Amino acid sequence: MTIYQQAAHFLSPLFPDIPTNEARPFVTLTYAQSIDGKIAGSNGQQLILSGNGSMIMTHRLRTMHDGIMVGIGTILNDDPRLSVRLVDPSDPTPPRQPQPIILDTHLRFPLGAKLLHNFQSGAGKAPWIVTAAIDGHTSLPDLLSLLRRHHGIATLMIEGGARVIQACLGAVGHVDLLVVTVAPTIVGRDGVAATGEMAGETTPATAAPRFPRLDDVRYEQFGRDIVMAARPAWD
Ligand SMILES: NC(=O)C1=CN([C@@H]2O[C@H](COP(=O)(O)OP(=O)(O)OC[C@H]3O[C@@H](n4cnc5c(N)ncnc54)[C@H](OP(=O)(O)O)[C@@H]3O)[C@@H](O)[C@H]2O)C=CC1
Ligand SMILES: Nc1nc(O)c(N)c(N[C@@H]2O[C@H](COP(=O)(O)O)[C@@H](O)[C@H]2O)n1
Image 1 (tube, rainbow, N blue to C red):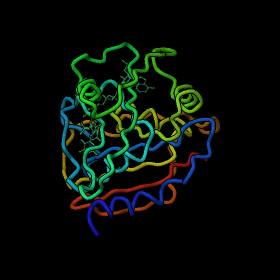
Image 2 (image 1 turned 180 degrees about the horizontal axis):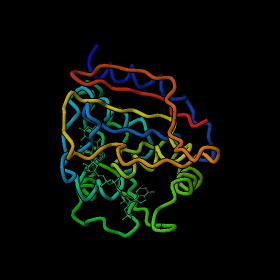
Image 3 (image 1 turned 45 degrees about the vertical axis):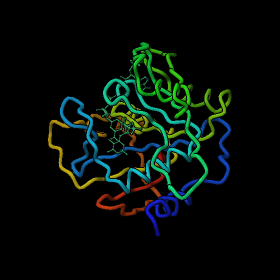
Image 4 (image 1 turned 90 degrees about the horizontal axis):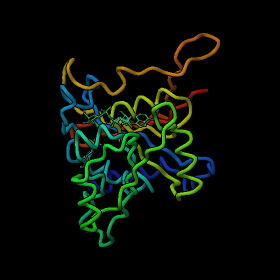
């Protein structure tokens, strides 16, 4: 089995054939972390944590979604392309590119961003910049509903960064699938923690944060990395 086939074999069963939720997209939250739970180095320095195999898996995941969303912090720090590039060279069909969606309340998106060059060169779609805010932040439930009902986004991959990951896992019921690559690397205490600063919505009865339980957990080794997929549940 090639690495491309392995990625398809691992990911395909995780998706329902047709998303049935008409209220919001099917949401996959994904990121790569070190074994000490860090997604970036000190001062947010971008780290290449994933090896080639798990990166191919991530690109396969991208092409399985209508949209790919990150926070403006990731754009300013990493200048990502968010496109599908690592595809099976024996497949003649060009990969489906997801729609980039950026959470950017204060319109800080830089005009020199690779995402714009990508679009201009035909390598990706023009990014959508989400500026709407309530109390200073975009409301994720409102945005998800809007994307599903009015913009044709039935499947959405959320790729970080730290604040967005924490917002997704700290609020009840916005994520259907969690895919985390764990790389055999130690970053240390100055790195950016995936969930370290996480504050969850509180349960009225106990005033304790309601972090999700992880159901239907699956693991797969890609090269030196372990990829975990699970379904978060808040009930
Ligand atoms: N290893 C990995 O897989 C990945 C690592 N990273 C790393 O993550 C770091 C970036 O993370 P971070 O700085 O936290 O930035 P984020 O990418 O999480 O963006 C956060 C910003 O998004 C805007 N935003 C708007 N609405 C929301 C909302 N509802 N919830 C959360 N944020 C919202 C806010 O800015 P505003 O108020 O201006 O709108 C906020 O400050 C980088 O170091 C990058 O390398 C990033 C992605 C993946
Ligand atoms: N899967 C994965 N592994 C890593 O090691 C990473 N650092 C990331 N980061 C995410 O990918 C974006 C870069 O994407 P492009 O290669 O430019 O398309 C980066 O901004 C993070 O969102 N992911």
